[in-house]
Length: 146
Picture (cartoon, rainbow, N blue to C red):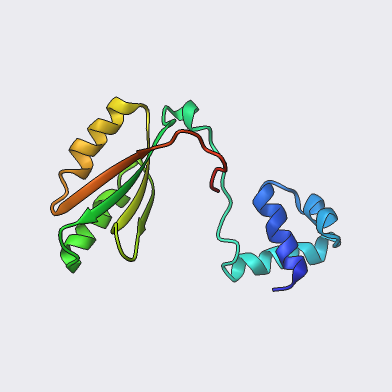
């Protein structure tokens, strides 16, 4: 991967809907070589997909909560059941297994505090062997993630 590939990636991260003509102009290539590079980056798995950034409020999911979560046990069955259950929940935007404590970081988006309480009580706390959940409520998003 060279500087031109990195420039292509940077431009597509800023705007994934760029046409090949616009992208080629921005990175200083003609359209043919630019398209071939993009196709190679896609084939190599560097570019894994394209997506739309959606306004969470428009979907009724503007209340975001960050959870630190620990399990009573790290045995394979407990871990697998926990991960499968939360990964399938529509409210879960991100689920990361961590080294150390806590065991997991979970990012959740729901309509409001009442919807979060329902999610926590009926979805998270019903999973066997959940030991501890700490909820963090965002005061302000300074730099949003991708």
